[in-house]
Image (cartoon, rainbow, N blue to C red; front, side, top):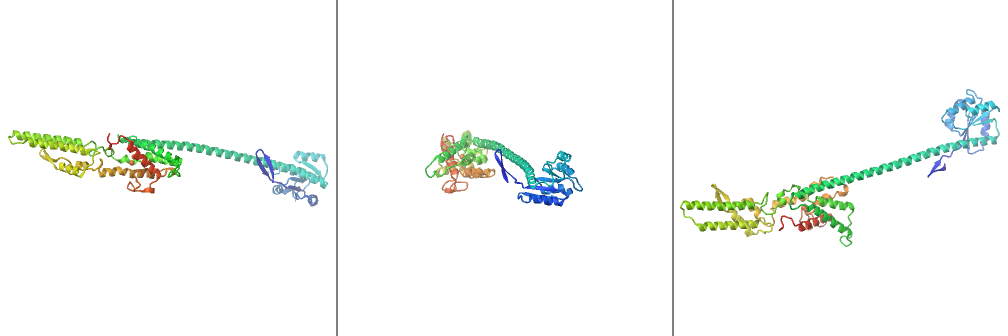
Length: 456
Ligand SMILES: [Fe+2]
Ligand SMILES: [Fe+2]
């Protein structure tokens, strides 16, 4: 092999030996030519005695020069010269006609059919070797030039294919990036609209989630900047920050199933409306009933006691005032309070011949809530939102880099002492990302002025 420099690339080319094919029906000529060439180590020699096998031998031996006799049985040499030039593989192989005589006419004919040279046999050894070398070198150069051209073409095509593949890959990744960005924007917008709808269900919590997201991101960024223990070894990557941001957006998504009246329950008796007004109306009705009964009794000339009626009405007023106090969220219901509520409920009044209690069982139950406005079952319903957040988010096919969103989002009511919910995790079982959202959630609740359980 030798190397050829073509533009920017080095191309390795095949080294060729000089292959001499003699087509001559005389054995003696073959022996003589063979002897002349045998001293030349870089020259291979092949003798074809039968003109009919000449083309076959050309294909098989691949000569760099052909020595062609003119007078042979079956074929004359000039016919073979024409056949060589018609054959694709032999067309360009240099051809030296070996003639028995110097004849200008035959010589001219041979050249016109495509011969490259003409020698009268037997030539001088030196001359034969010189001519063989001259024609072979020229042919070998041609072979190498064609080979170099072919290889350069292949190289160029390969480079073009690689460039096209790179270009296609670039376009593909740009399209993918655009598509991913579009999908991300869509998912973001979708999440925000769902969360905003949940937030806006309540006149009190509007904007809660958005504020929790902002606070959580601020805490995470501050941890990233902090060089002091225990945060010096914590560095959230962009993907992890995105995970915290999405988890914060979705931390209360489970509230979607909580009835509005529980989320907004501002007093112990609140349901669709505040039922204290119903009790007030009922007590006014009781008062009216008593007054009417008293009047009727007077008209029937029965003995009636005004003082007694006034005392009953005063007690009634006192009871409703007490119940109104018990209905307020910041009132702690003591055992005595609960006993008095129960006693009030045991009182009855008659209306249209039917006896009614002052308070229903449900009213007693709600008014007796010791602390806050929520009953145990309502508190359970509210707490269930964290479990539902986990359930809902676990159904979403988050990509790998966001796979912890359900875990981070749903743990925001866990506490370090293991008394939180939904799973009762403790200490290190609660990831730092969850703790960030928990702190943001509590901070937001403490600083928001519009919660139903706070004094306005
Ligand atoms: Fe929550
Ligand atoms: Fe929250």
